Image 1 (tube, rainbow, N blue to C red):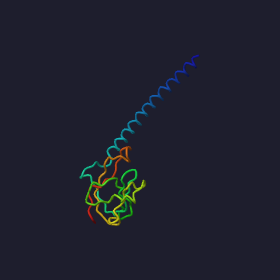
Image 2: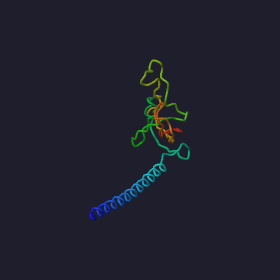
Image 3: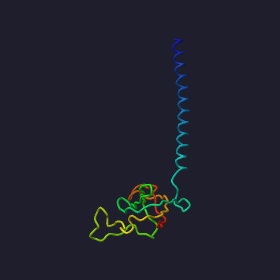
Image 4: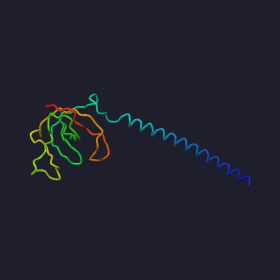
Length: 149
């Protein structure tokens, strides 16, 4: 009987120690996750302001209106840039199409053909914008200023 009591006591002690260790491990994991989340928050995309703006030299490729506006450019290295908006009214990259060319695919909008293939210095910021009409918010690159290159 004494062996059973000793065995039971040992089992309880082992379980208690394991539980404490497990709890300590869970606390450490929770702290690590919180620190990780803080790092992600601290490294978020810049807010919409002129001091957080960035620039790229890029050629105008196309404008499409699909789930949202897409101003497509290609930089000197060949990287394609998809801007979700254009706050600069100097250049009208998007033009309304004549009734005969409007359809459900282009929704009546297309590119200004005279601007396609031309190079620009684009100043842009990231803004919270809907990913699509009525959709969730996301950081979207938006053109703030356009100058010819």
